[in-house]
Length: 154
Image 1 (cartoon, rainbow, N blue to C red):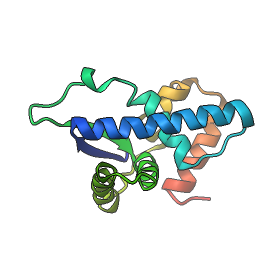
Image 2: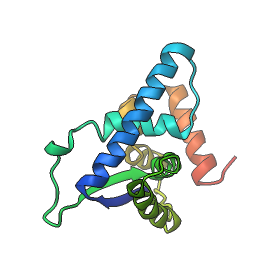
Image 3: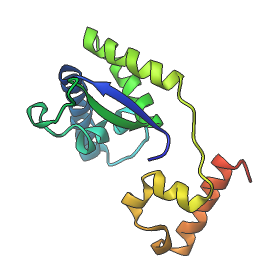
Image 4: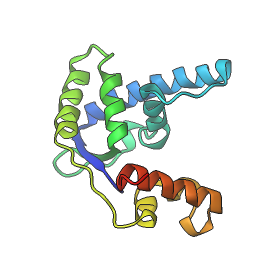
């Protein structure tokens, strides 16, 4: 995947992040049942982390020999998790924030040679299907986004 931040966390840190993500998941689920509106804010991103990455019970995860699990977060996911953990008051949350802060501060973006390679590596292919199969309008929108944000064209 493109622009990932890799973070080694132990079992306790996994549990802390899982609980935080689950709380955000519950808040967002309740919000969408009532409001039926969408806004991209950190709580929404962290809520999706629960269903995609932290839904597995801590007893069932596999740790490396050193006792850590490596998780990969996109840069925007790491920023959102950093923001939400700031609302928590525990020492464990602060410790995880310190780790995230180190990786966010030292993060450098990577660029791809072309739009199709970026589309595949960014995770959009998993969500929308192969680049060759998207509609012509969608392909134009993807290329426009890539040109504007990665090539500074337009």
